[in-house]
Amino acid sequence: MNSALAPRGSALLELSDARFENTFVRDLPADAAALNTRRLVLKANYTRVAPTAVAAPRLLAWSDALGQQLGLARPAATGPGTEVLAGNRVLPGMEPYAARYGGHQFGVWAGQLGDGRAITLGELIARDGSRQELQLKGAGLTPYSRTADGRAVLRSSLREFLCSEAMHFLGVPTTRALSLVGTGESVIRDMFYDGNPQAEPGAVVCRVAPSFLRFGNFQIHAAHGEAEELKRLVDYVMRRHFPEAGSLTAWFHEICRRTAVLMSDWMRLGFVHGVMNTDNMCVLGLTIDYGPYGWLEGYDPMWTPNTTDAEERRYCYGNQPQIALWNLARFAEALLPLMPKEDLEAGLELYGDVYQESFGRALAQKLGLAALDQEGDEDLLTGLFAVLNGVETDFTLFFRGLSSVTESGDDAQLVAPLRRSFYAETPAAHVARLAAWLRRYLARAARDGGSAAARAQRMNGVNPKYVPRNYLAQQAIDSLAEGDAAVLERLMKVLERPYDELPENDALAERRPEWARHKAGCSALSCSS
Ligand code: AMP
Ligand code: MG
Image (cartoon, rainbow, N blue to C red; front, side, top):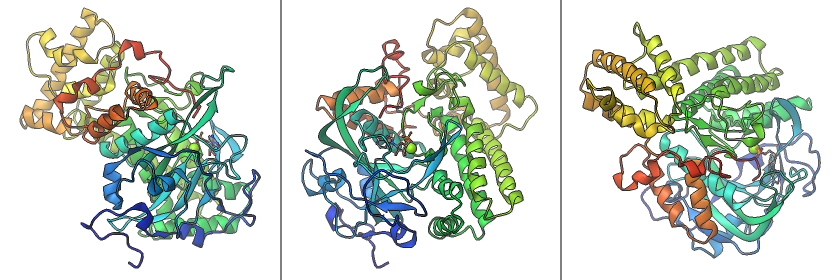
């Protein structure tokens, strides 16, 4: 490999010593005008545009894990490396660009969107040989900025940085985040959309993924009748990212399959993306664009963390698998010029089958069962969701606690390991109902054979103890805004081992405290970012 970065096992490199390639720029059509003015762009996949420098860049956080994987050393708080991560310095070999895409937002075609504040710097070859795009989010205006400012606030940037890395360690396909840089500039945001704009600290996140291509990058060509450009983009993504696919149909089916697996992962963990527009769906099947996301605390299929969606609840927890299918259908429509309708429809069907299969398996694993294929298992599941609905019950703590439940004649003792998952006083009738379900469950688990200890261990391997609850992220944001990075750093370290016990960090595995229920950023959030 002529452009390989550091060979495995060698010392970490400074960012400025890394080598970059630019296949996206080389292989795909550029916007003919290299002007950085807001406008409609046609027949192109990107516009060449440099990041806009910021006043006083300072490295606030760094992912050691991702740095290791890429072979990059943590740069000093201020200096040349951090300047690159802020967009103040473009290294030789980088060819920065903003991508053109469109999308359906909240069910309606929105036309051209594009990277309005994200700028890809180039493609780095990681230690494992993989090619990884480095993309700055909050890097300044691009032709796709529409009416916005090209910048991002610290709070939303920290949330993206934290959750990208947490998702990776939870085992969920995701874009990654390498760094969080404070800009030393403020950004004006009306966080509550109530006519009270405030100055807030600005930040830039360096996101990393093999590709950030979204359904919307393909849709925009279809919307403008750009058949040739559409074909070229599909060829590119197949060649670069799906070399094993072999045919257009196999490629589309693989995207359907990956999207189904992704939805199963979100649902098994209680992750709610919050803004599943088609421009926020990555064709590689990665979680992308962390905005007003959240984690189910009290189990409620209708819950959404996104206050902007509080009325319709289009993107609530329980809708996510259905919405992903809707998004795939819009994506499929964009691909109609390239392949038979029946093949696209078969992909959508495959999505349903793979989702059912994956989520069924995930539920079985959450319960420590080999499979949910025996007589009475449907009823067992119905009973499970009925008890979860009975009193407000923390989704994460309930499943984590389930592995500690042991046979007991006494209802109170049986239910004891689950008590910490209840948000409210638990009526005796609910305790009795839950205890009855637990007895059925334990009897069912016993029929699978194996020891209770082995089952508990398996369950703890899939039911995390630690997830980046919104109130924890908010505490990290408040501390960092005061100049203290320790809260974020501790949280990051713990979230690298979400399935481990780590008793010294029990405080990070509590249910959301009541003070956080209605506090801004601690449970629900607006789209303001
Ligand atoms: P999102 O809802 O965050 O996925 O963003 C939707 C579209 O708005 C994308 O095209 C973003 O690039 C763009 N956008 C969001 N925030 C900004 C901003 N502050 N400046 C420029 N474009 C933005
Ligand atoms: Mg987006």
